[in-house]
Image (cartoon, rainbow, N blue to C red; front, side, top):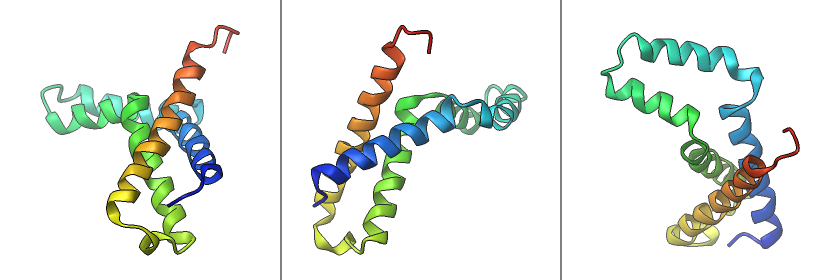
Length: 112
């Protein structure tokens, strides 16, 4: 099982990774291309799912947090140190921490 410090680190990484994919101007050209691709076939379930994924902090944050957790577990050779169910719960914890940071960020009124 991961420690509280690692949980906080992974939650912060999940938050930042989510911000990069959903909001940061660095990826605006990619998001614009995907949105244009979707607009060519609005009835496409796959295209709608892709655009939903890249525009939703909750959707993107879930997968980004899972990716960071998996990378951490593999890089530290911790994958086999706990049952799969424990890693699933860790995934919920990391994603929950990242989403709390996103909610806090979205609620700020300081001109962000």
